[in-house]
Length: 72
Image 1: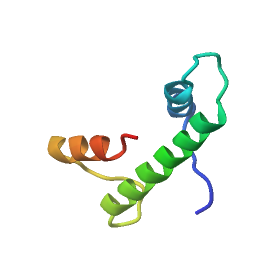
Image 2: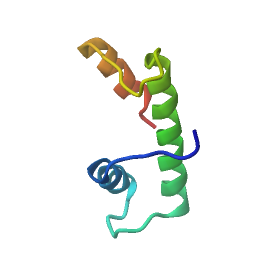
Image 3: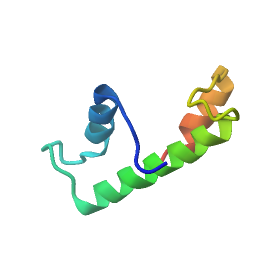
């Protein structure tokens, strides 16, 4: 698979969380951090998506592990 298909709310939330200056623009280092986060999140998601259906079920402990693992 090439690229990522995020819905609009997820896309804007992701962009806002990496826009350090809150000016609606990314510095290069912000963009690189965003890309690393997305790749890490995808890798982690894929490890739980054992059927390849694009869906996972997590209990709270697994969710906390995933969230903590994706921090930069």
